[in-house]
Amino acid sequence: MSRHAILDDNNPVYSFVELVECSRLDEGFVIQCVEYGIAEVRGTDRQNWQFRAEAMLKLQKAWRLHRDLDVHVSSLVLVLDLIDEVEALREECDLLRQRLQHWEA
Image (cartoon, rainbow, N blue to C red; front, side, top):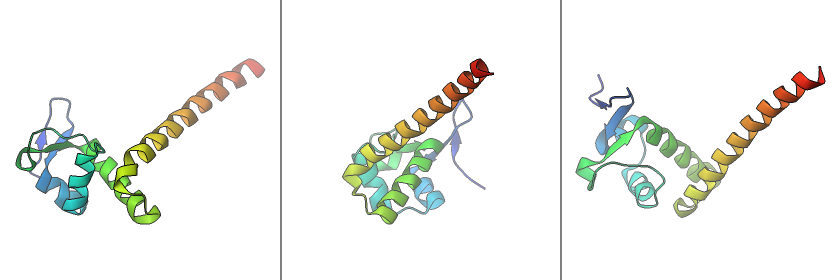
């Protein structure tokens, strides 16, 4: 059974140790990602760090980019931001296509 805390908005929060155990990510990689601002963390030191579930997903995505495409940790923030922007633009494009189809019909 997971020991992670639950926030008011029902998003789980993980300690550093829990995040590393659940995600199976290397501690050093997680620390680097926090230092580069890839993952948002609450708390001032590693013993008090708290990560939301979204941070775990972002760290896992960052790890795949680092491992599979050899993206340096210092570049992951930019790459992840660009991926998010492309996804947002695709969603907007899909919405605009739907609206256009309504007018073409």
